[in-house]
Length: 247
Image (cartoon, helix red, strand yellow):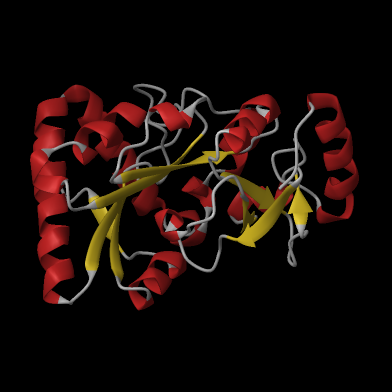
C-alpha cells in the first residue's frame, strides 16, 4: 500500500507552480482508527472540523477506509510501515527530480505525530528533503530542524500556547469562517495560507497564517473557527489579558 499522496489537493498543486512536489501522509485522525489516538492535543473543535471530512475524502468513503488501514499498519507493524514510508519518500524524490521540482513532505496531513516526522527528517537519505507540518503540540520551536518546519495550529483551547509560539517567532495557523481575512489577529499580521501549502517558504516569522474553513469546519460552533465579524474585538480582549505584544 502506498502511503504518500502526491500533489493530491488544490493547495499542493499550486505548490508545483512554485517549484515543489509535495507528498502528504494522511492517517485516520484522533482516535477514529480504533487503535490509538494520533492527535494527542486535539480538541472537540478540531476533531469535528478535521480535513478527514473535507474534499474528496468527504465524498468517497474508500479514502478514509484506506486512512484507517494505514493507521492500523502504523501501530501494528511500525518497522514495516517505516520501511514503506522510506520507499515512498525516495519515490517522491525521484519523481520530483524527473519533473525538475524540489521534493517536500508533510507527514501529518490528518494526524499530529511529531516523533514520526522528526525521525524521517533526520534520516541521512532525506537531509535534502523539506519536511513541514502543522501541529498543536506546545513548544514547536524545540522540534524544528533545518529541514523540518512547523506551524502551530490555534484551537479553541490553546490560546496561551499560540501566544507563546508567536513570541518565539513561530507562525500560527488560524481557521477563519470566510474571506477576506482580517488584517490583524492576536496583534499580528494575517497572511493568506490558502495560496499554497508551502509553509516553510515564507521568510516572515511570528505571523498568523489564515486558512478558510473547509468541510465540517464550516459548521463549527466550538470556537475553533474564528468568525470574521467578531474576531477583532475578541482579539483585543485576549491580547490585553495575556499581555501579548504586536509587530
